[in-house]
Image (tube, rainbow over all chains, first blue to last red; front, side):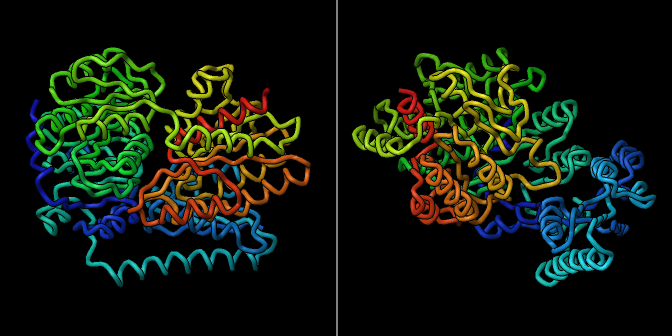
Length: 59
Length: 519
């Protein structure tokens, strides 16, 4: 079972991209974690059909 | 008078909107209000409330809807205006203080090339594609979102397995990686105990107890609740977590926590733990603990899992016990708490915000005194007829979906529980109210303070009727948590609540009190 990247993570500083609820990013900043808050929006303006098409295209 | 405003292309996260919604609802003269994004579920809800029009019906999840029913047009206008002001304030706050916020994961990675973890809490319907992107970029993932399909979960965990990455979730509320609390988690001392858990509040309770017993942790990996329950998910993340802790030289003891797993998955997990060669503590909530076997130790409750792990980590023998305070003190509390109860007082009412903590109490009571009604019951005859109304001995999980439609989880917004306390106090048959108090990041800033007034009133109400209400609570938290655990404890004790060191001990004390009044 390959878990090498997990064990490598354990040896590094945690650096986080936060996608969604902002309070999670604020909490991480509070404990000195480098974190970037994304301005996430539903893909294709929330249109499910187009969004699932985009997902299938890997976008 | 109903008024609706739809703002195209302005996305806000749901927890923030729920808090705004609460403010607008409390506006003088407002009968009802909804501030939400135009998702299918929300549009349906608005239709049911009669707060709809053509614009609402064609809204997308990217459109903001503010709908208000008020006593006059003027009030409705003012309420909508105040909602907009609150939203604008938020917008200017975030643009003032923060740097540019990327819209796509690709540009986020460009801005933060050393990122190694993505925390995802976007609506479930959109979450899987974001997880896929992150894993394909070799980033570990914590997936907080729920409503992710089983098929997606399996596919994403297979992908994580191929790449050797963490995919904690879906519906993973708690993790502690490299000492850093993610989402709903507490500040725990570092040490040599590593955990993998398929239960968020379960992980919180065990890590906090480890901290209280003077131990510390290396990692607290979450898996999401379905990881072990479903044979097709097959405990994939649990097995990877155990393997990583096995390889981790800092981890001396491994702890595994889960609600009852599927039989074949349990076997796989136990075999995997045996292979590690390290001392392992296992607690499957609700299953009878097995006998110790080689490096495998079975705990019978969450606090015991912590106690066993700390003892093993220190090379000491674990002493089995129920209470950490002297037995004589426990007896004195029971005597004091039951002395002034009226004849009709006989029932337990557990009002919980943590699902696993509710389950732990429910299972314990069931073993000892039989029928416990709950919205979490697996026995159909004991499921509460109406989750909003207690019957007999009741333990209610207020974090259940039935209580959280359109409002935040009770760990974030204590008003759900406050309302329930106000309702419960009118039932003269209640003898003990049992409460959990979950601290840490993610949780409310003052959970004890927020319900203190209603607890005081409940006590008074019983006194007026010639009885006495016993309130027993436990605090899931540590001295490092920002809520200040000592203060929380003092607040509860100031109005006569008994505060125990763990949910297990609080439940056992409540049980003793119930038994005493039944004599």
